[in-house]
Length: 351
Ligand SMILES: [Zn+2]
Image 1 (cartoon, helix red, strand yellow):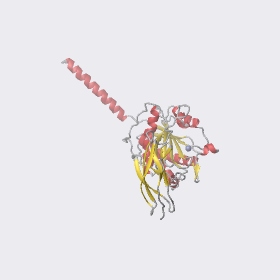
Image 2 (spheres, helix red, strand yellow):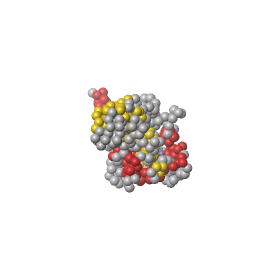
Image 3 (cartoon, helix red, strand yellow):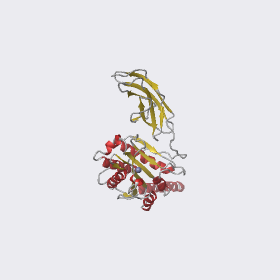
Image 4 (cartoon, protein in one colour):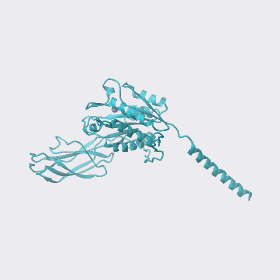
């Protein structure tokens, strides 16, 4: 009897202890989150300007996004926001990371806009560290912010990693933050050298929309709420990303499969119906393009439905073309492309 009372007593004590722990946890003040917003580039000299196209300046846009993002984030409770620069000044990547460390950053968000060598690509992308929990944090946040950017009509290229010849992260700001134990992402919002993105960026309030999208993603990631706006992401759930079991390398090669056949054609409309099959086992195929002159000139990149391996589309051949040769190409999200087999259409197109 005595013994069983002791058991019951012990059980109750354990139960109360568990209950106590649980209630302590739920009533504890949430930990304040510290984030550092890093507007990329800044200052004079070619290296500091960032991308400069179509009357748009990367170093100016990053600062505008950062300022609007800070103001937006400060509407949330339990967050302190710092920025690495507030004026048009040059700061080294090491100094940006050191500053973030000095203020106790939980996460560093580096704001950028993109450009490509042949001005062919468009869309948004997120770069994260290739290593362990830094990869997990960057990927989980990256997935959230990409769904916010997608709502603004930007094409989403994905979350990517890149290793340099040193075996560490290729991008300096990510490398410098990881060296100081802080997760960091580079947020490439859009391309300044492609009409598809530029037309959006030039919409009057688009920079502010980007800042709100970024802030919403950060609030969702940290499960914040705002007593000012009433926004409440405390119950927000997102898919967890698995910690990589090996070092992740960037994709250096184009899709291993890129094949076409001509299904039919109509000389009176100029349409050639092409079926294309393309596959890349390392990274998603996200763009395709086509040529009717054997690959001398290509149409602008189209969006490839990455859920399908085979798709068909019309190639428009201009009137007056004799025996056009159709060649297509597909690109993965590392911008590596592969050319298809050529197919000649034995016909004169007049319409
Ligand atoms: Zn940049």
